[in-house]
Image 1 (spheres, rainbow, N blue to C red):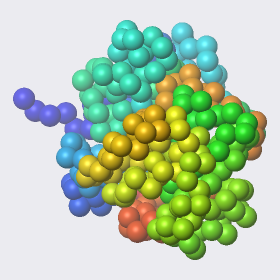
Image 2 (tube, one colour):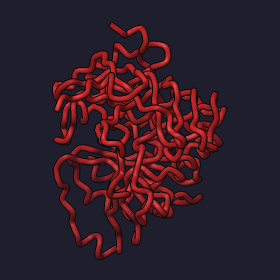
Image 3 (cartoon, helix red, strand yellow):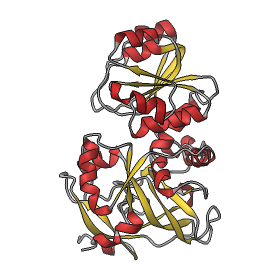
Image 4 (cartoon, rainbow, N blue to C red):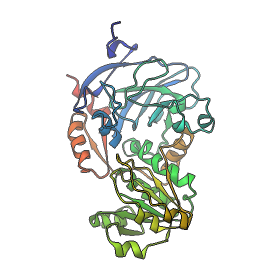
Length: 363
């Protein structure tokens, strides 16, 4: 059976940048999107954030990448067409799509607006859609998605600095809410001051919490306290600083994706406190059980959030002027951006200016 070329698979022509193999090198790519269905929203992509998951995916670090692969799950733009049954948005509205574009809609998770935990969740790229065709992400000129997976952007939310909230924002907002940490007066620790961590500080402060940044890098202290508004800063490698803060925190959001010891973090928690892992180290961490038992402490995980909560997060962010700190780059800079991201050389999120630079990259 002859495989249909990507540009002929669907009726709507599209253009983006794709990785062709696990070298991860991105280059111009012609493909196609499906027609706008009755419940679909089509939009012109204007910006797309670069997430660490994009870097892992183009290099097949997780072992399940399909090529050609168009990454990008922090995409925002302007609605150009809506299906006949769509009532959530209209042509001209500013919208975004985050990490997923489909689920079963019948399981317990879906019924509770937690599509992200559906066993049949369909991710925005590197996945197979309901119709059996391959999904391509946001490093592209156009996007179409079921309206359930469309996030409406309030007028005062800037599209470029708001785009990373569709992944980084919901990843930290959801556990703060779920584990009862989104309350005034709570003391929250944030481990790691990167793409996730800097947004976690902003949300926790907006909830009225006292926030302590926990980092291996003493050089980030001024940034954490003066720029991001954290209340205190701990160097995780300094035993005296850790000892002085023992048993003081209600919860900790751990954003670090490298292997690191969690025993010191458990010590920082009050009794009944929760350490929530949102970073994903590629090797197992050592979990000491005694501190859990002696303080009735929990180690938990959390992955993005459902669509209802994602919209709630964007609305909350707009109300409290929360955006990501970004560096806007052109489409043809993307491979350099990936190299820099691999070295953590970004404060704190790259965003591609698709609207102004993608078309110029056509061969």
